[in-house]
Image (cartoon, rainbow, N blue to C red; front, side):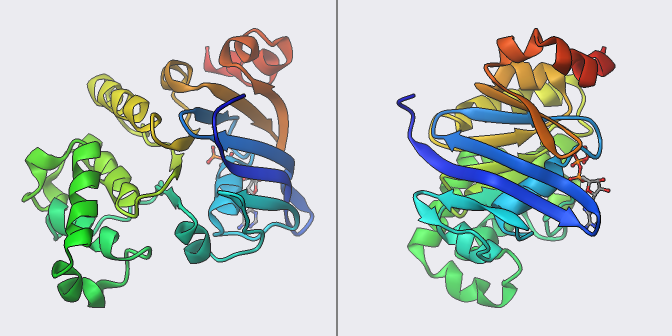
Length: 250
Ligand SMILES: Nc1ncnc2c1ncn2[C@@H]1O[C@H](COP(=O)(O)OP(=O)(O)OP(=O)(O)O)[C@@H](O)[C@H]1O
């Protein structure tokens, strides 16, 4: 214990018709920790992420962010409490420079509110937030490049910069290493290790090397349910988990 609880989910459940995609999931995210969520395709990881971000409302269960009850709240309301997420599907506006992308994200909780950006340019605090996000995501050397010409790995870094631009305390990262080569993945792991110092991070990721390098807490989901949760070393040696999932990864 000791680490500050920033997000608390209790008994979250989400049905799609007859299918229970997330079934009675409870989970705690603490500052200074990476909480990795793994599981085979269709386990409910994306649905869980959507429940925590407010993109989906739970059928049952409760959600608290920084002590506030945000059960059923909109994504914008949850973001205002200090939560940001990255998306598997890119949020980047390709023709704009890296800097303009981050600045746009910094001026609003909703990156699509383009109309405000000229006014936002006047605002020193917006610039400061954007600078900080750019630095944290290690993209300062790329600031004037159009986002479209960044490497795949850099575009994933930019997605994280967009999330950081709102100065969140809770970060939900959906497969940040997807499609990366070894060198890019190593850079991303180093970046995430740094980010966890000040944030509570939930990491949904299929790359098991990254998961075991980063996770302080590991939750395994199968068919919408948590089948194991705890210290990664304990989970790794859990026979039921190996049978259900890790064995498949070789
Ligand atoms: N909007 C939806 N409507 C109906 N069923 C859905 C919807 N979203 C997800 N599902 C179903 O819920 C279950 C969990 O899906 P989810 O995408 O959360 O799994 P996942 O663990 O993220 O999988 P992956 O690793 O492939 O991303 C699946 O059976 C999926 O088909």
